[in-house]
Image (cartoon, rainbow over all chains, first blue to last red; front, side):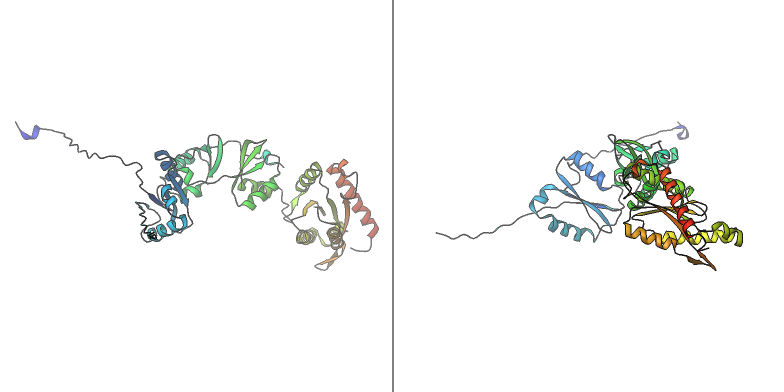
Length: 117
Length: 268
């Protein structure tokens, strides 16, 4: 058969399947002022996926509009202290059009001494 | 004039979960300058072209809109509406009639309407303005001072020196009146040719000072110009609220004529 008369259309499918993490935004999201997703959209998304588990904190900053934080983090550390650390790290790398997500784990180490009777 | 007489009743709305890109398309299709943002029948904001330019098109309207517009009662005057919108620095306001949304209004529309009520020669508002203020105060049973100010011998000035000079006199006297007024208490208008009306809620001492200044001859070019003032004091007259505004103007006007007759010949 003449090769010139052969016509073929093929599609190759490739699937990578993994578990969808709920919630997908991990522990915190930092929303830039000109980001494609605004704070209210982020808040609604978090509320729909993980009701009552996240808090949106709006802030007055040249590049950052708001931070979405997992409530449990706020229970472990003072909000002002936590936000101070997050902002210090985030403002070094964020631009106003970005949304950053981050894991934030808090490990508390306790050492106590007691009097022996 | 009430805001309900000039409000826009066609409301273009959008819900807060739509994208800014969608809102922009809708504004373009419907040829409107803003959209009212409503969720579950409640107004939560306003989306203007300025909001759209400042936001990423993927954002939802809730993240792009301006905060809820101020609400103005439908029986407020256009002057009150203009003042409120200026105080709040807003471009749009909602008009409410008995807690129901009746329409909306833009500051641009208000400014155009107010310009129609301004006297082009003096820049002061014309008679309908003072009439609206007076009728509203009477309706609200709030007393006020009414001053009817009539320039002395203005007809003679026109005859002797020509109408352009007469216009100069009107303009300069208006400017004097405008600088004398305190916007916290006073409203002034050019009522007719050489007549002005002031409504004031200031105290008696200030009113007497106004009358004194208005009646004292002032030099305008080479002329000494003065006015005769008729004063109706709403704080002293027990029957004040039985009169219509038109009757109060008549009273003040006649008092001004009496004053004029009393001082006739002493000034030009």
